[in-house]
Image (cartoon, rainbow, N blue to C red):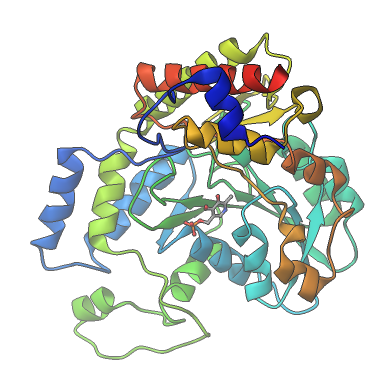
Length: 400
Ligand SMILES: Cc1ncc(COP(=O)(O)O)c(C=O)c1O
């Protein structure tokens, strides 16, 4: 069989781009760097005043009472499962279409993730599938705002309420988005964010948990600090050496210089989300008449934060596999990616939880057709044009 690259060379000549355009990238200005340097010159590199300032700024931004900063989105998920008391014998429902960390956090605490299938149009967790997976052992539901579009929180809250369950939002894709006019971060009992460089704002690595429940927030503050009730700065202020470890915790703290970066970045978020939405709109318009390219559906009641722009390829009509289209676009200098391999198909889950093909058929079929196109605020209009040109070029080459 003719290789994708050869086939395109026949049809296309030189690649659209000479250098690879990544699918996501951070944006750092001089004032971000200055904010970090200022903290590096101060007394408190960690557990200092910038942590509380970042937490308050973040909580205000998403309309939550409390925000707790931790060292990654994964640490935030782990802390959430701890705060809810998830343990052996407990089940937590998670969508099949997500990053593995969404399910792993349940396993960290000795619980069992139960995979629910997604809606074929949006690839967001299907509330009916969630309800079908509830058993007497179910304790919580983790919804994932996949690609940056909020889930149907009214439907999920109703299910959680009916069955006495806690609703957690893995909102790592959706900072700056909203649902029925309410900001992501205020829609569930606990909401989780990540500040990895490909996300909406970055602290290098980092995460936050938001909640309106002060008891849960306090449990998470103890958990992120070795299970110890006071931190170094509090003891210093009280002039005391005394502390007690009341539970098994971790060192999941975020440093002050990372929090300074977070504060600086958060101020720019609305403009960055608007730029992501503009790029997504150009893709939507360009692919509207292309029968082999189907962007994911977007509900009317959300403001989409577009961490990712995901398309589903009609691989039958195209006469090419996703792997071939992926390779061809990479050869054109477009850094496409795939989000995600459904979690229940990973060897770890097959081996330890007996999952496998057939468990979540919608996610499994979608996975074979997915591609994430580059989207990040620093993309120029020319970069967007290149992505669109490469998509047309590759689709045309295969349809001949
Ligand atoms: C949906 C989702 N959940 C959790 C995480 C974990 O976040 P982090 O990389 O900050 O640990 C990610 C990050 O890729 C994610 O996309």
